[in-house]
Image (cartoon, one colour):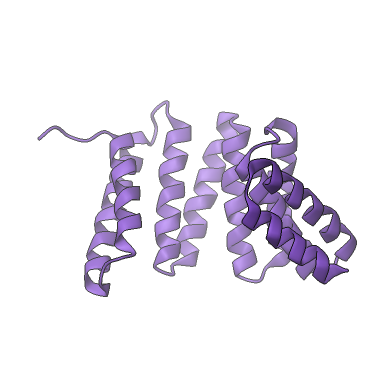
Length: 188
Protein backbone atom coordinates (compact mmCIF):
# COMPACT_ATOMS: atom_id res chain seq x y z
CA UNK A 1 0.00 0.00 0.00
CA UNK A 2 1.30 3.42 -0.96
CA UNK A 3 2.08 5.81 1.91
CA UNK A 4 -0.45 8.58 2.20
CA UNK A 5 0.73 12.16 1.87
CA UNK A 6 -0.09 14.86 4.43
CA UNK A 7 -3.08 16.27 2.55
CA UNK A 8 -4.63 12.83 2.11
CA UNK A 9 -4.01 12.07 5.80
CA UNK A 10 -5.72 15.31 6.81
CA UNK A 11 -8.71 14.75 4.53
CA UNK A 12 -9.27 11.17 5.66
CA UNK A 13 -8.77 12.10 9.33
CA UNK A 14 -11.33 14.91 9.05
CA UNK A 15 -13.85 12.55 7.43
CA UNK A 16 -13.19 9.97 10.17
CA UNK A 17 -13.70 12.66 12.83
CA UNK A 18 -17.10 13.54 11.38
CA UNK A 19 -18.07 9.87 11.16
CA UNK A 20 -16.97 9.26 14.77
CA UNK A 21 -19.86 11.33 16.13
CA UNK A 22 -22.22 8.49 15.20
CA UNK A 23 -20.21 5.75 16.97
CA UNK A 24 -20.57 4.22 20.41
CA UNK A 25 -18.32 5.66 23.12
CA UNK A 26 -15.71 2.90 22.90
CA UNK A 27 -15.64 2.99 19.10
CA UNK A 28 -15.46 6.77 19.15
CA UNK A 29 -12.46 6.79 21.49
CA UNK A 30 -10.60 4.43 19.14
CA UNK A 31 -11.59 6.50 16.10
CA UNK A 32 -10.44 9.73 17.77
CA UNK A 33 -7.06 8.18 18.56
CA UNK A 34 -6.66 7.17 14.92
CA UNK A 35 -7.62 10.70 13.83
CA UNK A 36 -5.07 12.19 16.23
CA UNK A 37 -2.40 9.84 14.92
CA UNK A 38 -3.09 10.72 11.30
CA UNK A 39 -3.18 14.47 11.97
CA UNK A 40 0.05 14.24 13.98
CA UNK A 41 1.68 12.32 11.12
CA UNK A 42 0.54 14.95 8.64
CA UNK A 43 1.86 17.77 10.83
CA UNK A 44 5.18 15.98 11.29
CA UNK A 45 5.50 15.54 7.52
CA UNK A 46 4.78 19.25 6.97
CA UNK A 47 6.79 20.75 9.85
CA UNK A 48 9.83 22.60 8.57
CA UNK A 49 8.86 22.23 4.94
CA UNK A 50 7.87 25.03 2.63
CA UNK A 51 4.18 24.36 3.32
CA UNK A 52 3.55 26.46 6.41
CA UNK A 53 -0.10 27.16 5.60
CA UNK A 54 -0.82 23.46 5.24
CA UNK A 55 1.10 22.75 8.46
CA UNK A 56 -0.99 25.38 10.27
CA UNK A 57 -4.13 23.76 8.86
CA UNK A 58 -3.07 20.37 10.26
CA UNK A 59 -2.67 22.03 13.67
CA UNK A 60 -6.08 23.67 13.25
CA UNK A 61 -7.77 20.34 12.54
CA UNK A 62 -5.98 18.73 15.49
CA UNK A 63 -7.19 21.57 17.75
CA UNK A 64 -10.79 20.79 16.78
CA UNK A 65 -10.25 17.16 17.76
CA UNK A 66 -8.90 18.25 21.14
CA UNK A 67 -11.98 20.39 21.71
CA UNK A 68 -14.14 17.38 20.81
CA UNK A 69 -12.63 15.45 23.71
CA UNK A 70 -12.64 18.42 26.10
CA UNK A 71 -8.92 19.25 26.15
CA UNK A 72 -9.27 23.02 25.84
CA UNK A 73 -5.68 23.70 26.91
CA UNK A 74 -4.25 21.45 24.19
CA UNK A 75 -6.57 23.04 21.62
CA UNK A 76 -5.34 26.49 22.69
CA UNK A 77 -1.72 25.37 22.31
CA UNK A 78 -2.37 24.02 18.82
CA UNK A 79 -4.24 27.10 17.63
CA UNK A 80 -1.57 29.36 19.14
CA UNK A 81 1.11 27.46 17.24
CA UNK A 82 -0.92 27.68 14.02
CA UNK A 83 -1.31 31.44 14.54
CA UNK A 84 2.44 31.84 15.17
CA UNK A 85 3.22 29.96 11.95
CA UNK A 86 0.73 32.00 9.95
CA UNK A 87 2.05 35.32 11.25
CA UNK A 88 5.27 34.47 9.41
CA UNK A 89 3.70 33.22 6.15
CA UNK A 90 1.85 36.39 5.21
CA UNK A 91 -1.46 34.59 4.57
CA UNK A 92 -3.85 37.05 6.25
CA UNK A 93 -7.10 35.15 5.65
CA UNK A 94 -5.77 31.90 7.07
CA UNK A 95 -4.38 33.88 10.01
CA UNK A 96 -7.75 35.58 10.53
CA UNK A 97 -9.53 32.23 10.57
CA UNK A 98 -7.21 30.70 13.17
CA UNK A 99 -7.23 33.87 15.32
CA UNK A 100 -11.03 33.78 15.26
CA UNK A 101 -10.91 30.24 16.57
CA UNK A 102 -8.70 31.39 19.43
CA UNK A 103 -11.39 33.99 20.12
CA UNK A 104 -14.05 31.27 20.13
CA UNK A 105 -11.99 29.27 22.59
CA UNK A 106 -11.54 32.26 24.92
CA UNK A 107 -15.24 33.17 24.66
CA UNK A 108 -16.06 29.59 25.63
CA UNK A 109 -13.86 29.98 28.70
CA UNK A 110 -15.66 33.20 29.61
CA UNK A 111 -12.61 35.36 28.89
CA UNK A 112 -14.47 38.03 26.98
CA UNK A 113 -11.64 40.57 26.90
CA UNK A 114 -9.26 38.06 25.32
CA UNK A 115 -11.96 36.91 22.92
CA UNK A 116 -12.69 40.51 21.94
CA UNK A 117 -8.99 41.12 21.18
CA UNK A 118 -8.80 38.02 18.97
CA UNK A 119 -12.01 38.92 17.14
CA UNK A 120 -10.81 42.49 16.63
CA UNK A 121 -7.61 41.20 15.04
CA UNK A 122 -9.51 38.72 12.85
CA UNK A 123 -11.99 41.39 11.75
CA UNK A 124 -9.16 43.78 10.94
CA UNK A 125 -7.59 41.15 8.71
CA UNK A 126 -10.91 40.27 7.04
CA UNK A 127 -11.77 43.93 6.46
CA UNK A 128 -8.36 44.51 4.87
CA UNK A 129 -8.15 41.30 2.82
CA UNK A 130 -11.45 39.40 2.78
CA UNK A 131 -14.23 39.24 0.27
CA UNK A 132 -17.65 40.57 1.22
CA UNK A 133 -19.22 37.16 0.54
CA UNK A 134 -16.84 35.25 2.79
CA UNK A 135 -18.58 32.98 5.32
CA UNK A 136 -15.56 33.07 7.63
CA UNK A 137 -15.77 36.88 7.64
CA UNK A 138 -19.49 36.73 8.46
CA UNK A 139 -18.82 34.26 11.27
CA UNK A 140 -16.15 36.53 12.75
CA UNK A 141 -18.59 39.47 12.77
CA UNK A 142 -21.15 37.18 14.43
CA UNK A 143 -18.71 36.23 17.20
CA UNK A 144 -17.72 39.84 17.85
CA UNK A 145 -21.41 40.76 18.07
CA UNK A 146 -21.91 38.03 20.68
CA UNK A 147 -18.97 39.30 22.73
CA UNK A 148 -20.01 42.95 22.52
CA UNK A 149 -23.52 41.98 23.59
CA UNK A 150 -22.19 39.90 26.50
CA UNK A 151 -19.98 42.81 27.56
CA UNK A 152 -22.96 45.15 27.60
CA UNK A 153 -21.86 47.29 24.65
CA UNK A 154 -25.33 47.36 23.12
CA UNK A 155 -24.65 50.15 20.61
CA UNK A 156 -21.71 48.30 19.08
CA UNK A 157 -23.55 44.98 19.31
CA UNK A 158 -26.49 46.43 17.34
CA UNK A 159 -24.18 47.67 14.58
CA UNK A 160 -22.46 44.32 14.40
CA UNK A 161 -25.75 42.36 14.36
CA UNK A 162 -26.92 44.54 11.47
CA UNK A 163 -23.73 43.66 9.63
CA UNK A 164 -24.19 39.98 10.51
CA UNK A 165 -27.73 40.09 9.10
CA UNK A 166 -26.47 41.71 5.90
CA UNK A 167 -23.53 39.33 5.44
CA UNK A 168 -25.53 36.15 6.09
CA UNK A 169 -28.34 37.47 3.91
CA UNK A 170 -25.92 38.03 1.02
CA UNK A 171 -24.75 34.44 1.49
CA UNK A 172 -28.33 33.14 1.52
CA UNK A 173 -28.02 31.83 5.08
CA UNK A 174 -31.47 32.48 6.50
CA UNK A 175 -30.68 30.81 9.82
CA UNK A 176 -27.93 33.37 10.39
CA UNK A 177 -30.24 36.20 9.32
CA UNK A 178 -32.83 34.97 11.82
CA UNK A 179 -30.24 34.82 14.60
CA UNK A 180 -29.21 38.40 13.89
CA UNK A 181 -32.84 39.57 13.85
CA UNK A 182 -33.52 37.86 17.21
CA UNK A 183 -30.52 39.57 18.78
CA UNK A 184 -31.51 42.93 17.31
CA UNK A 185 -35.04 42.53 18.69
CA UNK A 186 -33.65 41.61 22.12
CA UNK A 187 -31.35 44.65 22.09
CA UNK A 188 -34.27 46.95 21.27
